[in-house]
Length: 394
Image 1 (cartoon, rainbow, N blue to C red):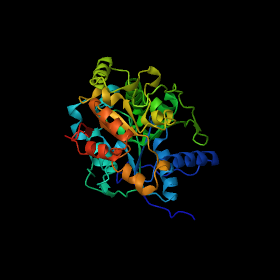
Image 2: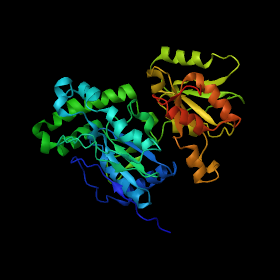
Image 3: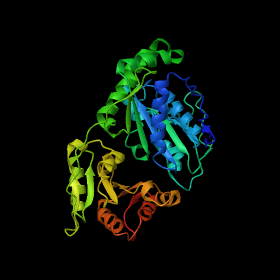
Image 4: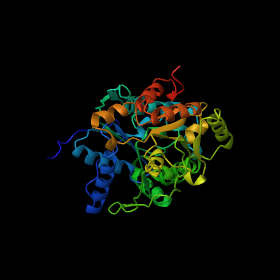
């Protein structure tokens, strides 16, 4: 039976690009492959992030994914991070025109979270805003709400989509890869209508500089679910993923902690000390730079063969930069291991991952291992914490 086509809800912003015309059977096949992989992540809400250099084709690819997913019967919401920039009227308060200033100051991540990502992630929310401030007209559209179905797929494109401020939200990450010079040339042609003869300089001296800072500081590529060479629009190709070492040697009662960020050694030592406060509790700690930049899905896939493991913990960039040193707890239970969709939806009501202070690692691991408590109970406790972090049940 063919699924009934669902709706695609677009942002009310005037900063719009049309859905591209079909380019080739090869491109259509790749879009189908990616959309199928996204839908395989579950039947509840899914958040998809698409990043890449300016003019890499992010918006077009997002539209193509949305169209295919809607055709499969899942409602889709389309958003772009450009609709969540800070208002131009405040530009005298900060630098937004140099490369460094653009990276640090152009986007309003607090509004991205509060208007778009937090509602999309929250089971209680039934709507979200797909636009903060229109980047062209500067009209505030934050009161314009779009319905959020329980099985909606939110597809968001934009540069810097995997900065630490919003990186934890994504269920699936896509990077569209193009050569920097091609990015500048494409962008200059695209933006000549508003930037005129300054278009190339803006792309080379502002956007490209900002993106190089992002790549150097955040190193997002190793965390991607898929990297796509989008140099030739009609002939995109999937790039080979980065290889990671095997994870072995976990004892029967050991929690598993994988370090994926190597920027702050003193912060990491704080985490290690908190993990060893109770000498009777043990953990296998993977401290290998070869895992630098790995995301949750990559770690879960690497340890999926450990059938006795209920949860894995990541010490990532957010762990190292936050005051609470919260590790990312990720369930190992898949849809296939549940009796039905209803059981899996119940397990992941508050998401398939949450943050926990290091002192919570052993309690979570032990209780899940013996079936004394469920993942959803800890996730719910974290969800209701002001910082969305599990601390304790006391």
